Amino acid sequence: MALHCIVRNLHEEGRKITFPVPNAVDNICSKRNNLPSNPKELLMLVDEVFERREENLDLQEVYREFVQVYGRVVFDPKKPSPLNFAHTRFTSSWQMKYTLQCNLTLRDHRK
Image 1 (cartoon, helix red, strand yellow):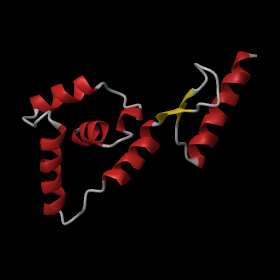
Image 2: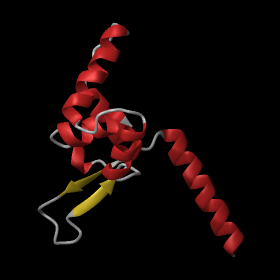
Image 3: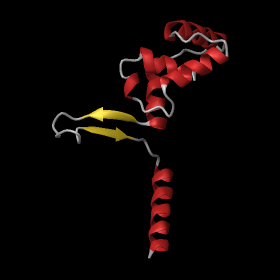
Image 4: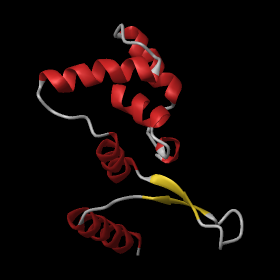
């Protein structure tokens, strides 16, 4: 939740990630857990946690991982509106295989 807020507000492409909850929900959860809702203050706390664990917080790496999990909205100016916006999702090979199997099974049951 804290990383959602940090990446969404402090990474230049963070607003394009399609997180499953709105920013307001993350802020409510932050308040409930006595965490600051200000992303810069939250980043300082998360940095301290990473330092205690002797790890480095790489915002770009966290962004990439969130894009793989949640997907993002991309813009292609070559296409006409509304087709110029697309939602991308990362799917691993086993997820693609599973999805294909499910779709084939559903299609067979509909016949």
